[in-house]
Amino acid sequence: MGTNNKEAPVSVITGGAGFLGSHLADYLLGNGHEVIALDNLITGNVANIEHLAGNRKFHFIEHDVTEYIYLPGSIDYVFHFASPASPIDYLELPIQTLKVGALGTHKTLGLARAKNARFFLASTSEVYGDPLEHPQAETYWGNVNPIGPRGVYDEAKRFAEAMTMAYQRYHNLSTRIVRIFNTYGPRMRPHDGRVVPTFIVQALKGEPVSVFGDGSQTRSFCYVADLIDGIYRLAMSDCAEPVNIGNPAEMSVMDFAHTIIRACGSESRIEHKPLPEDDPKIRQPNIDKARELLGWEPRTGLEEGLQATIDYFKALVEKNEI
Image (spheres, rainbow, N blue to C red):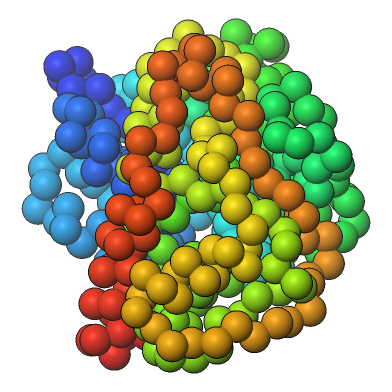
């Protein structure tokens, strides 16, 4: 673990048993990296990485990254992906969300500095809050309610970005920041409260599909394989400023609900529920920077991505796991 064989770069992924962390582990292993995944499993799931058991280049350590991190040997990259990342999670785990954004970022930056490794922060479109600029470019500073219920996540990520830039400027640490927009795909948690798994599970079970408000709020959905490709390109690039990675194809939540009902072959009806406090009304990335600097844009069509995601959840439903 953390060997000094420089033929294989060594990458640490915090939140490595999570939705995005596990897909990143697959991608890095496929590109010749040795991977050390850290996760305290409060929202991660070892089922996401069980297919990697026996892979000699993959190592899993159950660890809370808000505590001191000791890893022997050389490390080339530290990918900080640990954090509750859905409204249900950060409303139920507000202090843990703040701690992993603050203390977890501090500990992982310290690890990267000690190992002279490149640090990569998984930030979020939530740093833009309920945006007054549309679409959102990296130059936009955001419209965030710091004391609202969602503020624990928004401000944790904003603080994490500030600390990452401070380490870059003060310690001359090599850092990268990605602002991730709505992403979907296999390994999402069925009941994490996000739109895609919620709608799919409800549609597959023939239950009413829960649309908050009138459904006119918009989201832009990026398939996970496209996102991870963009993340890897950014990690290996010379771009030290934040970069949006997401799909600019915007659609209303109501249209998305109908799309999923059709794709699932379901007869579910729409059920309206009250709009949560500070829920963003619009969300669409400006990806000009990613196109220009990384040569990246999403390539997976919604129909293709949804089918792979629906197949994943259908298997869980058939096994009575949800």
